[in-house]
Image (tube, rainbow, N blue to C red; front, side, top):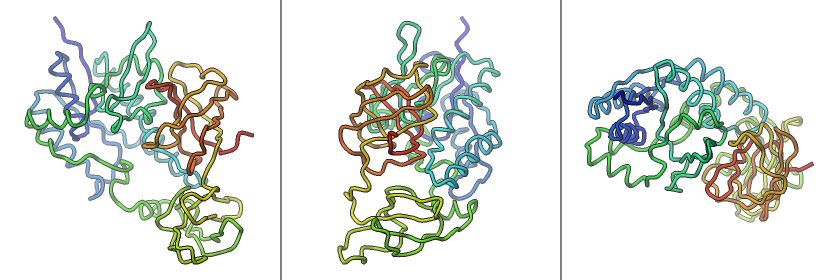
Length: 361
């Protein structure tokens, strides 16, 4: 009997390595695909070491591996959009765009060319098939859930995807890695944006975006300093403003609460709980829905306006196939244009869109 072929994205980390081992144990013919999405092999983002780890893992668990370079597609589809959004004063999430354009598009197409019927990744999320329709669910381990980053997947992508770790706790994954003696069993989880790695974010942006200083004003329009360029700040940012708590004698830290692109002005306030940092509504654009259809008008659900945020109760309002609005039960902190608002009904991810503004008008 011919085994079903599955191509898994394998990064050199412990999650994708254990996912590959699990698939092999379940009887699949497993091929590991190592994706090189960034050409700059620096001390901050070392694909060379990751490839060495992948080769070691593949040898141990007994699977074939292939390396494929998607760096051109990544720069054209993901990084270029990342720079456009920052230049426009917004704060994008390139990991979501990477999943849409690379991991579940370019990677999927390459896997099909290799004769795969299905693909797999080490993401923490679940897929449930109900009556030939597919639902994306949160992972069992909510502390590792990555459905937020996967909310733009559609029915065709979900129908041929496996998430082997969706039903597992991270501690169990580490336990398996140690038990089968994976060479990367104790490797630290990667953090931050993949092409930036652990290097200082502002230093990285400075390589691609121009310095454009302008006034830094308080909520009541008093100039208290100068910023280096609006692209280098995001709403809710505390570190890197350069004022400390010395102004007004309150000792409270400063936070960015808005950016005036037209006048090149950065607006800041003192105190984490300042009313200017809170929003009860938002408007979303570029909507994508897992089922293919927008939620029902007036649906009471929950949403995340950034990864790691607690679910926030809200009401969904339909505007068009690509636009929607949310009204929150409780005001949300630092809702940021460019980030994604992702909706859930219980554990089921409905989809979402890019935050356009905190106004519903």
